[in-house]
Image (cartoon, helix red, strand yellow):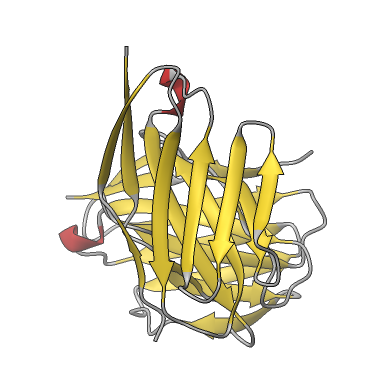
Length: 114
Length: 111
């Protein structure tokens, strides 16, 4: 298995909803990442987990809450989002759980906040 | 600084070669990457090069690195319609998980 999977593909949620994005990889990678990508822009790093521990939080608002239940799974819990949070949310993983690893991306979840 | 710059658009005829250019500023860059993103899809890692190399070839793809000028290029030989996409150049530096991306080059392949 050489891919990163993400569910759901599309999500529409209201500003008072609570939802979760899921990411899974079975490549034995030890680091996992969440990125946010707006249209026609490069991805922006949100969080990094290395060996199931949160290594980096890029000053992301607390309405986004990451969780890494095990080395294969990464969740992003969403609560009280704003319309400007609408974007493509990309998950990535990398083999060694350290910097300088190549990162492999999933297909993304397209989130619309109404 | 971690500024990565790319030209925004490239139009190429089917069958010709495409060359996408990228410049970066961080002299401690260690790996440099090329990613491809098709509409509505995630990023696909195409290739990467270690900073002590000056060239890497993989089938139709050739990466050239000029470390003195901090210039990276991706050449796609025999460009096909399936190569139409946004191509992102990215760098990673020692002691940082962060990939610094360029703005992306939109490649359009015309018949």
